Length: 344
Image 1 (tube, rainbow, N blue to C red):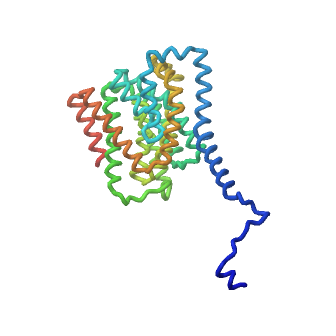
Image 2: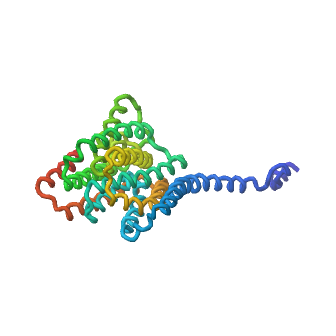
């Protein structure tokens, strides 16, 4: 009988004490957990919170009247906020060049709008990052935020008024494009080893992150965006942090820094122009949806895909800037100096 059983094994029937649907139950639970984690918590929580507050204020203050004349910015920010949530480029990196180069909006107004809209969009994306448990580089988030806040405030108080509008635009596109070049050159090394966090973290690296945040904050004080891509470039190029970790880190960083800039310009300076408020009114319901969606989608991208987004965006921005502004010799030299210094 044992020999027969070995040659022709009898299939084991499930025990009455074992559920025959045990595996499907686990599958259903896993799917339910993913649904709650990624969709309900990651997307709906920030979206519903912002949308509820917005439409309550919209009905009270009649925000919808602005859509008739400012709708073009709503369309721009569908793309801009999705890119901001998906890459190290904050949505201000789309808004600032579009407003200043295409719509001929003053650089200061465009910078203030970038602060305002990123406070909503990037912090909505940051909530998505938090609820989904997406990995971030915590040292960078904390220390660069501290340095960035100080740098942004110093720029708003002392440096911004000394810079000509065209200089602000060219500095913005040149710095961003230089980082894209550096990232491209580094990614030519297909065997580059990356990490999920800064290795062998110590006091020197802590100080460096604060300094990086400070200079990135100066850039944000000029254009509303800059700290995010500056920090992204440093931690990916110098510390070899994976782009998929660096991206949600800098998205959260942009949200914090933008809130500081928004607060300072509104509460301390009381200088935000009506045009910025009008654009803000028509873009809030847009960015609260598309920025978290961008963060969700980017969490499933390969790091090289995220880098390609940066190459394309910055190439378009700098080509457009040179075509529209047509800078003179001095501005061209300044722009080229930023590019060459970063390449070195």
